[in-house]
Image (cartoon, rainbow, N blue to C red; front, side, top):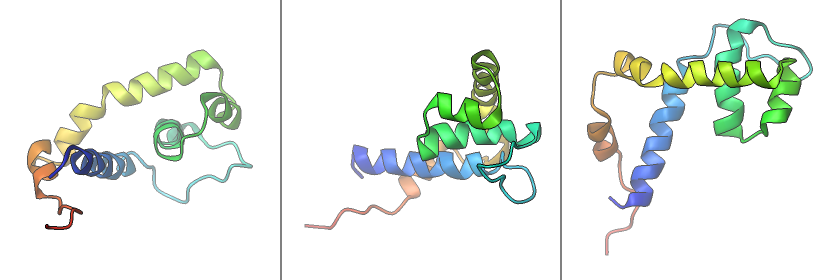
Length: 105
């Protein structure tokens, strides 16, 4: 398994774990202001999965820069604890068990 394969596998694991932050119900549309229960998930998902600029996310959620940074910090600080609670299998084992996309030579 190459370093690139490990990086891709880690990305998959993190995106799957991020989905567990997602509140129940349909994801809010961009034209509507989502309720606060969605903020943790939406800030992380929009910034790290979709790649939206911070200003665009703040504008969508109608929050200021300070609030945006607090929400992101709170979500990221609790991340390792949440991941351990959701999945007791160590990350190293998860990465090693992902199938390699390399072609055998």
